[in-house]
Length: 180
Image (cartoon, rainbow, N blue to C red; front, side, top):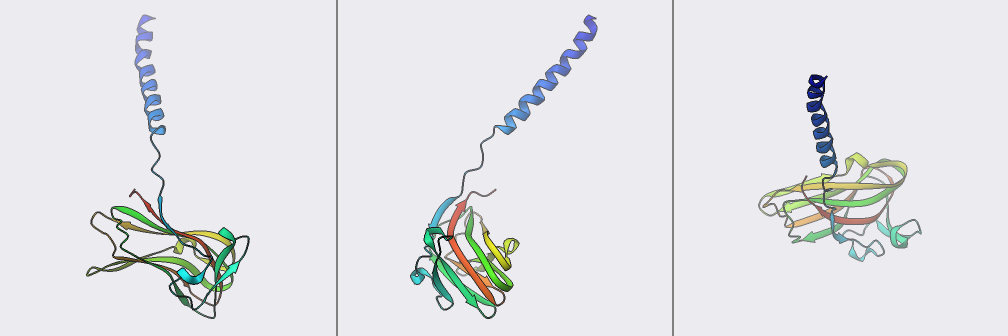
């Protein structure tokens, strides 16, 4: 009988050790939250770079009571914001906005261009959450990975509409998150 108890003891320690490891893994710190670098006002077209198709619409469903409305008869790109000298590298840059559509025959999504003088221009698009037809507010995020030493000279934030229809955009912001 003593012999059987001695054989069971190592199993109990093994089970206890596994439990402690699982508990420790579950108690690790969550990743830091993204830091908001800039919020963009949708209450006035004054801060918008390309105002040709854009108009402010007062609506209680919009953040702050107003959002931007774009009506187009065909494919269009609206340059919303241009940022110079952000001084951000070794991070994930996130352009985020809420978008909705009505009668849109193509798709609409946000995009972010990072321009590096002498090294080129690169983009990121929120194609996975593009809206089409009649949709409610959809949160879109365009991520751009910046390695150490990659600091964009200019960042352009756009709304791309690939067909006729109406699109609203609201609650736009730029975030910095740690690299995964």
